[in-house]
Length: 253
Picture 1 (cartoon, rainbow, N blue to C red):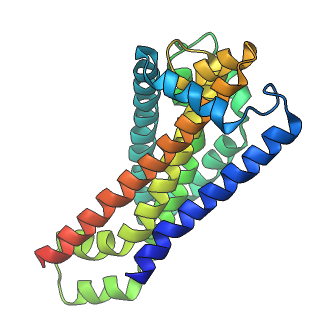
Picture 2: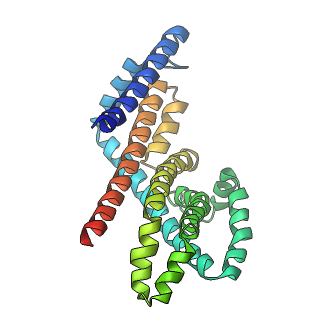
Picture 3: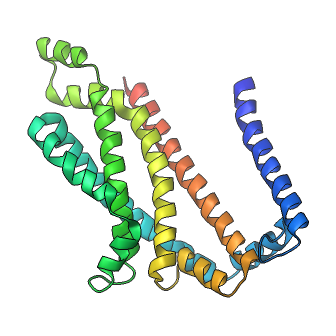
C-alpha cells in the first residue's frame, strides 16, 4: 500500500515542481513569445480541445503513429527471430541496421519529398528510426533467455509450442513490454516532429509548426502538453495490456 501511494505521490510532486519552475521563469522573462505562463497555455489548451480540429488532428497523428509502430514491430520481430535462429542473418542485419541508424531524419524527408505522399513521409521516417530500436529490444530479450532452460526442455522432449509460449514468451514478456512502451512513446514524438517538417494537413505536428510561424507560443505550449499527455497515455496502455496478458497467462496455469 505504501509503495502504491509513493508511486502516485512522486509523479504529482514532479509535475508540481515543473509547473512552479515554469511559472517562475515565465514571470521573470515577462514575454509570451519566449515563455507563456501556465494560465495562458491552459486557456489555449481548453479552447483547442473544444474544437473539431483537435479531434481531427489527434486522430491523424495517432493513426500515423499506430501504422509506423505496427509495421516496424512486425519487421523487427521477424528480423529478431531470424537473427536468433541464424548467425548469418544476424551478421547480415548488423550493417544494414547500422546504415539506417546513421541516416539523418531531414535527409530521409528530403529524399522522400518527390516519391511519397506528404502524409506517408512521417510514417516512413518513424519506421526507419524505430526499426533498429525495436530489433535491438526484441533480440536482446530473446538473447537473455537462459539457454540451459531451453536445453533442459528439449532433453525432456517438451513440445515446441510450449517452449515458445511457456518459456520464451514468459521470459521475454517483462523486458519486452517495457521496451515496447518506451518505443511507442518515442514513436509518437518522431511522428509529430516529422509532421512539423513534412507539413501534412490536419495533424498535431503541422498545427504546432503553423502556430509557431504565427508566433502563437501559448498554442505551441498547449500542443506540447497534448503530445506529452498522449505519450504518457500510450505508455500506460501498453504496460497495462502487458500486465493483463502476463496475469492471464499465470492464472491459466
